[in-house]
Image (cartoon, rainbow, N blue to C red; front, side, top):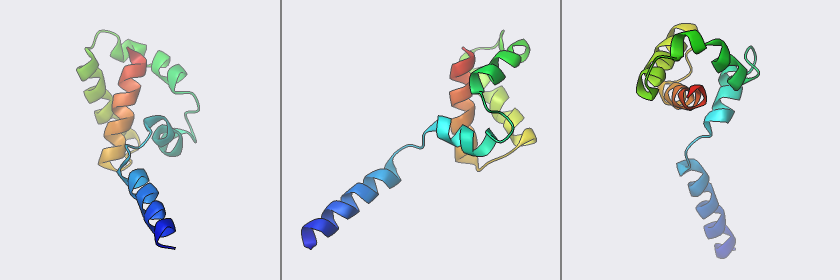
Length: 87
């Protein structure tokens, strides 16, 4: 029984400490209206094209705040992931 408890707690702790998957966060937070992140980034090319990766991340973070704001950590992860897609 102790071994089972230790193994369960170990796996649970690992999953809690793991970084959230930004693609999954996007699906949960944005997927209702925006099904395809790559297509979305292609449509925002006019705004993101001339920016550096850091500027893209900041622009997307600011946009998400005013558009639909999940919690700050999720928003930052989504913005960073979308900025990579836009590169």
